[in-house]
Image (tube, rainbow, N blue to C red; front, side, top):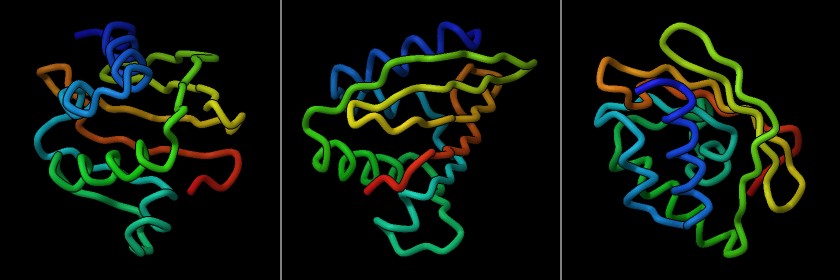
Length: 118
């Protein structure tokens, strides 16, 4: 799967609030880091490992933002991955840097927020 296809699938899943479809975008052993992990899980390194932890994290996020919407601002590609800049429904800008595995799933993700996000 190429970067554009993966990013489109990921955005559609989030905007549909479809947790199963969101999780299907990630590798089973995904390495994920974001400042939201620090706040929601109390992990100073901001990291989660694997789909099970990520599913719980995203379920919390969906519960906190029932009107959630992501609007793409830019997609930057690189061999094996991409960076997606998007704006949330609350105006917060986010940059996700995604490395794709051989199957086209997100294997390593780093999320960067312009402002604090609960």
